[in-house]
Length: 486
Image (cartoon, rainbow, N blue to C red; front, side, top):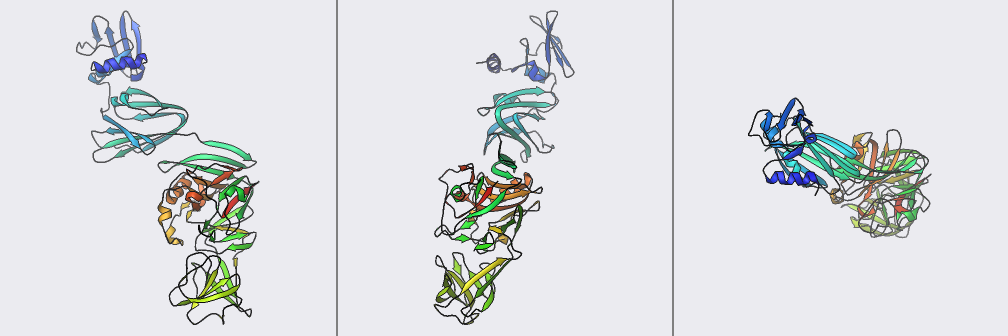
């Protein structure tokens, strides 16, 4: 046991707390056989074997050289702030200190961040901090000053953060301390780097992201075929999982445009749209039409964008009561059914008012579906929900076609595409959280626009063939991905 800890142990056992004078904002010197303690407008003199000379107060407990009893300073009115009780506990990944206050705390909440070191000032006398069970790896020095208690915290190689905030009835002041793994930054190519950073919302949320000032972003993959993102683009600098798909069939759900060709049709959610290195987020303006057996051409809605005639391309229920469906495989009508109907794998359907097809239709006849973006974009990948729009929080899944909200309420890894106002692109995966919290985190980090892609087991960020976003299970093969090339 260290000498100071041994001294503190015996002094506590004897009912007094001896502390080195530097922990009390004072200095010590020997002068003419007396011990002199001075600072902060206080001068104390003790003569060994005789007693206190300044002040002449025989009832004060004696010092021991450079160590003064805290009780003596309290009795002399050295501290100009109230004394409070202290409790300790845990809150999430935080070490929590609770000060039980004599009155409502009127100060504003505080927060701070330090790399390896951190200082915190509490506006109360809190001797109970001497008994704090500090987390492993954290060294804490406690100083008791006239204006309050000062903590000096050290954790080499770690990121330290604190939050100080009041709670109401009964009045308390809460200090949450976080010991976090250090942030990471490494260059991948000119204008491209990998980063691991924290956003505080207010709990710390670690993000794994590739930041690019330039490069080529391409959608990769094939409908109906699943693979790990790294295997969809083996030569890419970074690969992020793409949009949604039906887990049973591997059918993409949502718009997917690859080199100007529509691979999958819109599903009523926000999409990432781009040409070159200019990116946009919006509900796709999509023109779709069917061509009949004799070349007839009719405009149609697609999936959630219903019209008099609506094409359904995604797995799930197609059509509504009062409609009929032409079930199509490839470009041939396989059957006519009353709606609604669960759309079989590998087929699409055209819904129309009962008894009123857009043109005469029969089994075996040709029926083709075509579509294009307006205005055209060379690449598009639908995700959702929208997280940020032009520097503002925009998360509102009720505006997008999410029939089951439960996946958006689950705490799980989240994948997203974002960019800053200056045009730096982010491909990222977060620690387990919800999309709404991720939106606030990205806003706090300075993102300008952001779109959630798929989440949960599909959320993966691969950098040069290595999975950088941790996931407790095995990475899930996906149908589509976004690959960044130099």
